[in-house]
Amino acid sequence: MTIHHQDQFPAEGHTYHVNFGSGNEFEIAFGHQFDMTFTKLAEPNKGQTETIFYKRQFLREGLYMVHWQEKDKTTVVHVEDFANEQIYSNITFPDGTFFNGVSTLKKVK
Figure 1 (cartoon, rainbow, N blue to C red):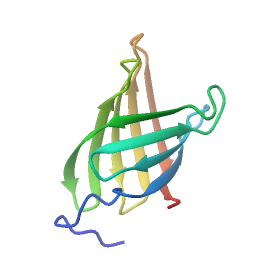
Figure 2 (cartoon, rainbow, N blue to C red):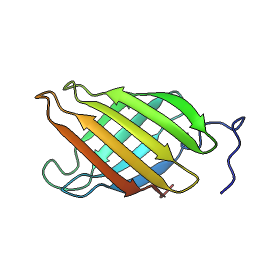
Figure 3 (cartoon, helix red, strand yellow):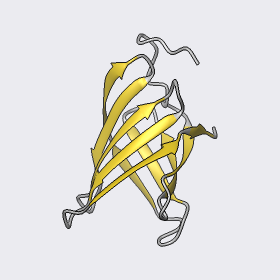
């Protein structure tokens, strides 16, 4: 896939499926105004959704750092590699514990 920097953020208006394992499986739907809704696809809390506003930073062609904070103060940083269809997730939970995972970044819509 060829992505050019002058193009809009590749995820805008699209939905992706990601599965980091250990119950961390999500559908993430990107809007057009820095909003994203994620739906949990595995237990616990299957079906739970949250809409957040994210910030992003262009790193190189097809590679972006995307980050946000959730309502419960969980902080999430993704490195989203659209050229290679990979996503790297780094999460800090409110209790100070961490999660690091990698998944394919599968576009579903």
